[in-house]
Length: 380
Ligand code: FUB
Image: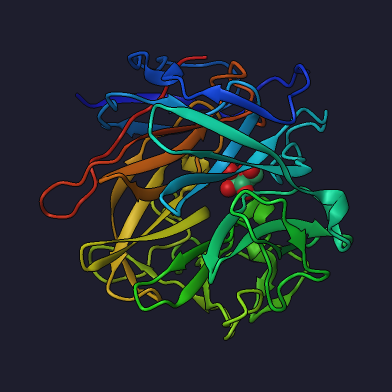
């Protein structure tokens, strides 16, 4: 059934109890209560009107009841499922359109050896204070492994308040990670996602608009001011760069990842329901590359497919309808024979946008390779 609802833009900020540094807890299907109909209208500003047609997942698992976490990047290393999230906490910074309220300072890594089993929080993996060039706001990370070494990629603002992408290394997937003393040369903006192709090449996708600062860059240079293409022009694209053998530098200048509509035309700036906002993720299914991303101010996770890791990618549809909270950010991984969507929402904090919780649910493909649209909205 198709229904229409309004998305809330602002949420109240309150303090929360301090989080435990290291804990082990059971992966509880906390989110597996049946989804209720979203409210017909909510308080605060009305931000957009969204059609919800997604199917409710059978089971939604919440990974931690101890920490607020977000932006989950999931990978299978040595047969175990590892999740690299942001670590939300209450810093008291008021909410704004630049995401200043996402004032995170460290990362924890989660892991599990079965879906529905015990989730281990491996404790502090990296702290802002350990990164010599970092200023503030440790946002959505990702990880990769090569030749027994593990790499944590993290966006953080430098001391001039410009987002850069850093790398930290460990000989264990859970860390702790030791950061390089400079960000990746030529990196900018945020939300790095590293994709390992079947030929052993690694690509980093990155970028995000508004608080993600992508609109402040052109031709790889920081311009300082916001510059968006006109509504009828091609939207700003996520970026992709091949990683060098050392995994801590780019082997090439970052390129635009072009996203096309069904007519082969680039998706435009004014197409808020489909244009790229942040949270690029790439995975492979059968013989296609799937680029998925958040539409930001229309709060969806959508996807496009292509024949090369560089694209172009053609828009296909919605993966995840808006969740409770402003942001929507995800990853997709195959584990123990099934595909899983990792995402977050603000249900554990009662709807506070900057205090989110990581969840996972099975992702299903239809026979033609399209992804079954999901709705995991829960009321606060
Ligand atoms: O968590 C901080 C930022 O919010 C992420 O980098 C974005 O993708 C959004 O989820």
